[in-house]
Image 1 (cartoon, rainbow, N blue to C red):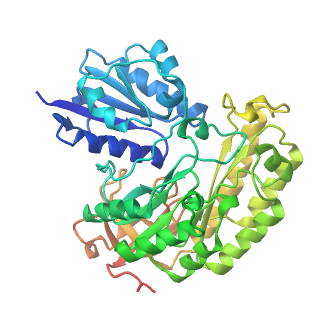
Image 2: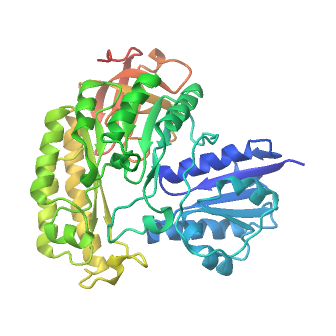
Image 3: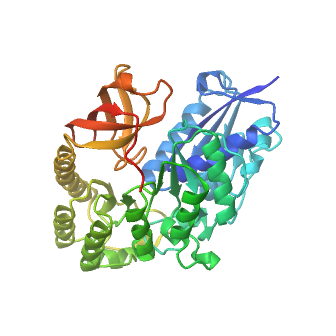
Length: 452
């Protein structure tokens, strides 16, 4: 009898790609049926995130929730992802209801884990070393966009980050394999291709490529027909200005950059072991806007890192006010075991860190609202993904300056009859209203602005 398998994937888009690869493995001649409704699942896979405390707690809570349903519909619980790589032994001991584990280097074992041929077993902690190429994927979130993971791991030495402990050292995939996967995604109807990695702008460096990400994007533009190609997660220490020159020239390479700066104070950047300085960051952002005048910029910052003084936060606050980012996220520092930052002194209190984060987000909310209001009356290319979750009378989509899942949305409340019945689809939309995160607009045409 066919087993009905459901999956919960937590964390970042890179983890989602792993989940889709595992679903692809389950579709290769195995006697399983993938179900979206977990209430119908005989086997549930929880693909965990181990980035920070909040993510780990969410993973544990999810595992415990499914474990509580063992014997009441759920026959088997399989746990995968980053937490397995780092905490497999602890999870096995603490939650014996888990039937099998699949680490980052053994995604092909998911079929055996689901069927019962692989059971839970303790494994030494170790970081991932595999690099997956040319494996089938089953898209888990529709075809409006899909992520293309261009590399694995990270070789940066940020003192607060535990990702290298799980994902291992930086390693790039080949251009040929990425083109094949992108073409396969296009054949499945994907509209927007999003290039992701832990350090995307370093792509190809380990392969001896001087301008790796730029060359990859050029190749993808030539070998595929995606209307939108974007990359996510630029690292300040590996920026190549040829990438932005290409962005300024090629309309299909969308004018967007997500560059997590984490802080700007020289004191905190040194403690974080991050490159750059306040002056260098100001020069960098100014140049980005000169090379790509219509670029949308997003960043993230951490408040409450060990050693952050009131003056350091003041410098960060002033920088955000100066930079006028289109979008920004801020997070309270999370002490991760085995990281250098976890051993540092002079840690601001949690209350102080949260107060600083709230102040920073209040400032950014006003900035985002002002920048969104400036779009009222203007017309933009947009990708309409489908019906809005909150109301069947609204459609939902994004303009170029809104990356999937992390930025705001575009809500379509007029001109819906001008759109194709089959979504997702591209359209021209005139903005009629604005909020701090979301835009509202009317569809005016299905013809996009001519590509350059």
